[in-house]
Image (cartoon, rainbow, N blue to C red; front, side, top):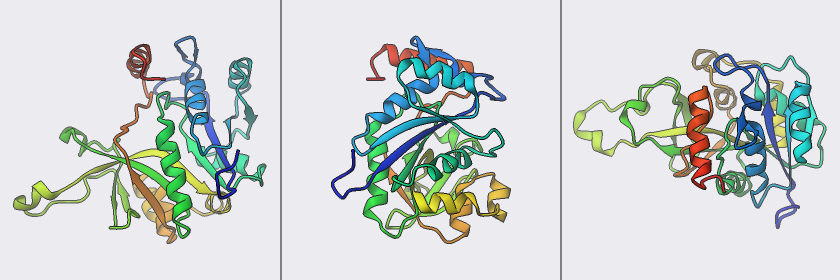
Length: 254
């Protein structure tokens, strides 16, 4: 379906079988189904998502998800990132006005957050991309380089993303006023900008921080950021799978 303004929204879940820390994790069994299938099915529940599919370069993933009725498309195997993979898919779907990237290991992704990100992009005609962030309440995470931080302007547009603690508080007396946001790996792109993004060369800050989204900022693109309480629980190692399994058994998965 399309939203009330006629925008068609395609959600793409990129899935590759290789993983350094957790080989084959996209097919890891979770409550009787492959991990990636949970992310796909949750994303499909988003009200503004017109259609969804899993994009993979491995026929094993296609063969594992299709029996469950999941839509899956094969892509090239030489993509450097998930963004490049969804761009290949987007190029084949000119009917899509907006393309959403949901990580395949986000088995508990909240459909309402997907909707909020899409709506933020639709509400800001100057924005090329929309994404999400949540408050960081555990101070131990502030200096963890695996936790990407984002700072925004007063309109909710991203100023910078970093693996370092931002903002830096110079004077201790001001510390109570500091708010820290963790960036979540959920994106909505205008299709034409996604295709353009995939053709841009890597930028200096992107190379330093190893953060793709900095390529957009360094090229002057506007990234709209919505704030949510959903913190996201990605599966990076087998122990994470056990945590998600327990949450699903408790009914969090819906």
